[in-house]
Amino acid sequence: MTCRLIAIDLDGTLLDSTGKVSARTANALRAAHDAGIVLAPATARFYQAAIRPFAALGIDVAAIASAGADVRAAGGAVVSQRALEPEFAAFVAELCDRAGWTATLATPEWAYRRENPPPAWAANAPEWLKPVTSLAGEQFDSVLAVLAEASTESEYWPELESWAARANVFPALAYNGDALLTITAAGVDKGNGLRALCRYLGISPAEAVAIGDSEVDIPMFEAAGTSFAMSDGTEAARAAATRQTATADDDGVAQVIEEVLG
Image 1: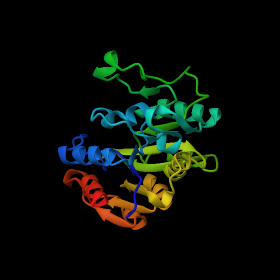
Image 2: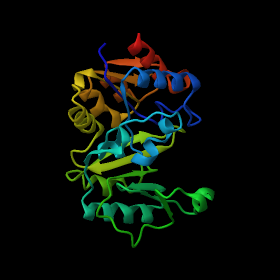
Image 3: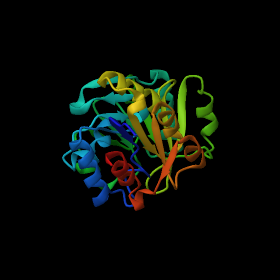
C-alpha cells in the first residue's frame, strides 16, 4: 500500500493495557518517522497530552487532537480548530459538576481536569493542565472538546442526547477499560480532522492509514485509504475498518507499520 501519513488512536490502540508504548511499537514509530511518513495521534485527548507519547520517543508529530476539533501540523502549527458553542460548553460543564463526572475540557492552550477529590498529582500538574474540583465560574468560550468518564448508560445521558443536532457525542473506552464520552461540536470528528490535515500537507486521504478501536474512530476509517481496527476493538469499529490488526498488548500498531514499510 502507498502510505504517506498514519493516524493512530491512543487508548486501546497505541497504548497497551498499562498505558505504555511497547519497545517494538516505539521502534516501528521511529522507523516510520525516519522514512518520511507523517505520524499523527488521532485522539480525544487534548493536543498537549496527545503528543506526549511521541515526544517521549523524540518524534515530532502532527496531531488530530480533541477528537478532530484541534488539528495541527508537526511543530504545532494550527491547521484547524473548532470550539463548542459556548452555551453548550457551559451546559456540559454544569452537567459534569452535577453528575460528579471526572472530565477533561480542552481549550487550545490548556485543559481543565475536573476531579473531586483532587488527584495526588494536582499539586505538580504541568502548566497546560488545570486541575479543578468544580467547573463553576470558569470561562467556556473556547472549549474544543470534552472527554467525560461516563457512558450511555448514565442517567444523565438523555440530557446530552437532547443536544444531538448541535453536538457530536461518541462512546469510547480508555486503555484501562473505563467508559468515556467524547463530545465535540456538530460536524467535528476524526475523519474531518484527517481530511483537513491531509489538505494542509498536500497528501491525498487515499495515501493515509488510520488505526483505531472504537466508534469515535469510524469517521477516520471512512476518510483514510486504508484502515485497521484492533482485534479487540468494538464490533462497529471492526466492521467499518478495511482490515484488522492485533491488540495493543500484541503490538498491533507495530505490525501495521512494519507491513507499510515492507
